[in-house]
Structure formats: structure tokens, C-alpha cells
Image: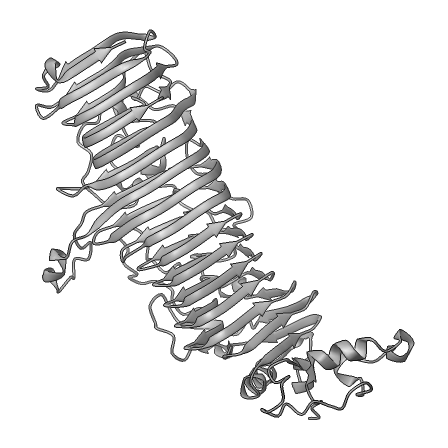
Length: 566
């Protein structure tokens, strides 16, 4: 096999200056050196690390039939050994199995170029140095590497439909992976890598997760399109224990979690992106998820809750979600927290003595429309079951047992709900003490939460400012329920009521101030308080004229605990 000398970027620009007629019919790597002597890639050369390695010069064929794994890996290895450069995937369909990216290498997938995963399982291996959790069979990976780039306007296609057998990995609620399908390739995995970026490419059709990023630092992900809906557990981005991440301008359409952030992800910004999936967008669980901002994003046709935090032991703080539009979602926000291990096989009970918390989380300028129940996406070829608790969903802030969520704020949040909640749902008083995903909490009879707008339990330091809850068809549930909420201020709440029930229900809550409430449609009662622990509730000002009566006292509450001044 004849190999051409790699071409440096400087040589490329010099040769492009040759009159076009002289270049007619010549390939990039076949042009003879004219303006400068050939670059030898010697380490002493100042142009080291700038060369271009065309995979065709290593024997690759873009005919959609040839298996090119060896050729592409040879180009990457040569580029890495010679102090880095650019490995070029030109136009064509280049089939391959597992390939390993290495330090200093830029993989450039040209317009009309496609890396296409083999349909054969035997062409894939586990990534060397990649942990086995959630599988480590992979198409493209890097481990313990640095200064890597994947770029270009081309496509990386995992051919994932070829691996569909109807089975997922069974890591959903209560399944714990038993009997799960893990023997299928992820599209990309970067493990313990530093300073890498992926930009502009289309990542599509993975057999498993699209992009796993594990214990990495200094990650840049920009202008990526992910279209991943051919198999079960088709996540978009999936992060574990990663720091200093910046995501912008991405468009993600997938089947499972669009941007999962498990474990100790820190110093993360996500902005100017759009997302759609069957399950969840921003999914948090366990670890130390801290110092994360999400802004200027569009979420549409997403079920299973766009923002979902479900954890036992965790140290989650300083999360900000702002300027977000949610169109046709369920949820739309769910936080569940127990403060103790959710793992029944936990062999280290002493770990439960380490303080855990979920605190300092803000939601600002959110506009959402919430549908009655999930709807199958027409481009997902297999049906997805609907959980009972997904019906008539609401915002859920759910501290369990003796633990509290702390310092949660919703500011300028306007939600339009489908409505349709029943008196049976409204009558629910005993809510399961589960930190499961929100639909697990509400998955008992009667279906759905007892409030249509916001249900908050065990929250300290809750702020609602300029919050508006409305529904499209009549709903018999209260707009807001506080259960064991302490130190809350609600300013400028506007909500539709029901002639059958109260607008607000407070259970064993204290030190709550409501100002400038507006009751938008007739309600049986403005406020119902329950429980002997209820104290120091004040309502000051607003328009409550559409409430038939201002106050109802039930289940041992004291009328003197409430002061209402209209």
C-alpha cells in the first residue's frame, strides 16, 4: 500500500494559491510540492502538529462496503505519533468498527463524509481504559487523552437500528439493570480526558447512548446536532463526574435522557440549545452536582419531565435554569430527595452520616405548556409505556422524611396545564414518601398529584414571584399545595381556581407570607389550612374576590394561625 507524505496546513494554503488550471484533477494529497519543500514532520520543525492525514492514503475506501477500521486507526496512530494534526474523513461512506482517538488528534469529518458503524457486533470492542458501568462497547472513544477535537459538517452514524432487539438496559425505576441489554456499542465515549472539543458534526443512530463523557475536564461542545431515536436508551449527552463543561448551539432529538448529569458534575454551562425526547432533558442523580447554569433553551415534545432531580444521598447546589421555553411537556420540574442511600445493597451505612443537601436552585423566566399525558413520537419506531403518575402532572418539590430542600425559587414562571384533574386526586392526603422520579411518586391511586400547579413538601426557604398557573379545561385540584413548608414568600401568584375545592392548601406549614394574590376564576375557598403544626400564615393584599370564602380550617389546624388582609 502506497502512502503519501502528510500535507501540512501551510503547504495546503501555499498550494491552493497555484492557478486553478494547474490543480485540475489533482487530489489534496497528490499535489506535488511547488512553493515550498515537502515538510518531513521532524519534531524540530515549527509546523509539527499541523499536518493533514487523509484516511484514503492509509487504504480507506468510502464505498459503503469496505471495513475501514484498520486504515482509520492507522491514520490516527500516525497523526498521534508525529505530534498531532488532522485526520481527514473525506466525502464518502466509510464503514468501520471500534476506533480509538488519541492525544493531539483532530478528526475532521468533511461535508458529505460519513463514518458509518459496522452492522456486525464482532467489529466492536470495549474501550481500553473505559469503565464498564452502563456498558463500554463503543464505536469511537478516547481514554486518558488530551487535546482532542472532533469536528466538521459530516456525520458519525452508529447504524444502531442493526442492534435493536426490543430490550433496553433495564436501568429505569425499580429495574436496577437486571436482565438488561448492555452488549451494544455507544457512539462516542470520552473517559478521563482533558481539553477536548466536539463541534458542528451530526451524531446519529447510536445503538446505545450517543455521547458518554466520564470524569473529564475542560470540555467544549458546540453546534452539534444529535438525532438518536432508533434504539432503547438512546441518550443524547450523558455526563458522569465531569468538570468545566461548556455546551452551546446544540440541537438534540433523542429517545432517552437528552442531557443526563449523573454524579459530581461541576462548573457546567448550557446555553442556546434545543431539546426533545421521550424521557427527560436535564437529569440529575447523586454525587456533587454543583455550579451549573442552563439558559436560553427551547424544550419541546418532552415527557418524563424536562428538569428532573431524583436522589438519595447527594450534595446538589447552585443550579440555575433561566430563559427557557417548554412546549408540550409533562412535569415540567421534578425534584425528589431523601438524604439517605437509595441502594438496598449499601454496605457502608457510615456514609449516610456525611451531610447531604439539595439547595440553592433557581428557575427564572420559564414559559411552559404541560400536556395531559405523554404522546409517542412518530419517529420512534417502538411504543413507550405511559406511567400512571405521568397523568395530570405538575411541578413537584419533594423532600422526604426529615430532610428538606433548601432555598428554591421560581421567578417569572408561567405554566399552562392541560387540566382535567379530578376531585379524587384533590382529596389525596397521604403522598408516598419516595424520592423516585416524579411519576413514581404519583403512580398510586388515584393517579396524578393532588395539585395541578405546584406540590411542595419539606422545603425551607421557598420563593415564588410572578408565578402564573392556568389550565385549558376545568381542573378540580388546588393550584398549590405546601406540605411541611417553612419560611416561604409568595408574591404575585395568579392562578385559576375550582368551584369544587380550595385554591391554596397548606399542611403543617409555617412562616408563610402571601402578597398580591390573584384568583383568576371562581374557587370554593382561597386557603385551606390543615394540621396542628400550621402557624404564622399571612395573606396581604391582592384580588381574592372570586373565592367564595377566604379560609377553611381542617384536621386540627388553628384559625388563629392565619391572618388575611385584603
